Length: 637
Image (cartoon, rainbow, N blue to C red; front, side, top):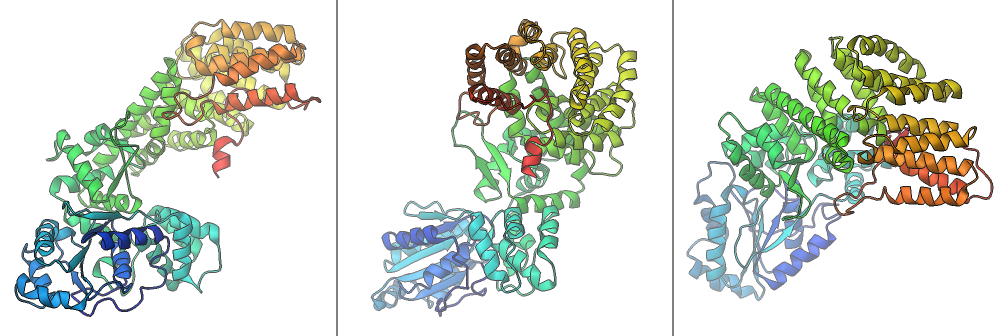
């Protein structure tokens, strides 16, 4: 990345590349050498800071060529189109191309012309290279640019960021002997900078300024455009902000606006989402897809999935580009508007996911949340981003979190949901029905591990639910009371609460567990003591209105019935029921839905099958349906 100085140099790259610049680039190096051996034009492409110049310099220095003539392409958005031709002619010795050919071919080996950083003069570079290849048969051209030139005989070697292991190796090579091996922290740093070699090297250099690895990682978690070097060989490598700013200067006004406004996305996004967030102030919605395509070609964005696939294209912005875009957004005074649009858009998306779940399209609901998980979590951060955030913005975020109750409770993200609710409830001043629903959800998510908090929250929810005449909320309060009783071992009280919840919650009531879920919990609770009653309650759960459209409730009811059969001594029937219920949870079709749905039910069924197949009973008490201690959140932490 900083392997040679700026300017024109006819002396070629005679020295060895800096230590570590080719770490993790064995395949790309081989492809580049093969491309130059078989063809006369090779372009090394990739996003800013990925090491295009370093790789080209290292290959040029390998000794396989005659003279290596290196030309730094002129930069800047207002570069004279003829500046590149003047530099190349000067580097080649002056005169016409016909006069140059005899001298260039006198060495017996081809002359290699390296045109570095051609983005600012890409069009002029393409025309010049075409003329050079036609008139100078002994010359081969190596170009570095974020985009290919688009010529017919061009071979393209595209560089991607380094894999984690290679990025760690590069970091340690730059940081030694200042770093005692702390692989976990170094790996975290490399993940934060997404394996971009320039960012990895700049991060390693911060250790010379007295920063510890932990301090470096924590600061990179917040932002990374501040990374810089005191005396870089290349001007554009003096800081990560300069490297990212170079392509920004070459964008037109609409592309710059889309770049900065799309920086509010925390994860992948679709064209339709970008059109909503990025349009306005001179950018029409129909312009946004074209801007996304050009930003993708420039390495600012990358696409997920296969082009032309069944699902619409989705884009994700690199971390450095997102930080840079957020800076530009604040400088333009558009941050508040962009954040407000983000909150409203993803609040609506959460509402759609909640409606899909209630309508029985639970796999689609889970997939929608999974595809937008990062931004749905960022919904809370954006709603609270400003100290004077409007009350409506906080309420919108709170409503979105409540609509995603199934994601927190059913898909093992209880701790994350509880944190979001705690932050938003602290800023939501109105004591309204939304606050009551949010407190109920927070109580349910807290019940398995923090009974005191859950009881305190339920004490605030109960009067509001009664005054509002909300039977669904009243019944769900009883369900959480049943969970609390189950946790403390009071099975009689738990059974009464679950029965009351099943009798109170109306069928098809959105926003929480259906009556069949409470009946399934009641059946599981009764199975060891009253198997016949447990089987009856499990059958009642399966007979509830709308249960067939509720895959989660159906799976719980089937589990409860198999569990009751097992405790009644009907082992073979219990085994077959559990196997059929587990098979019904298999994702389909696998390419579109690779992640398993309802992990709690799946784990409970597998535990039951193990219990049935084991010669000796384990004596493990089944978990109550709903949020669990730990779960996926604890596993990730």
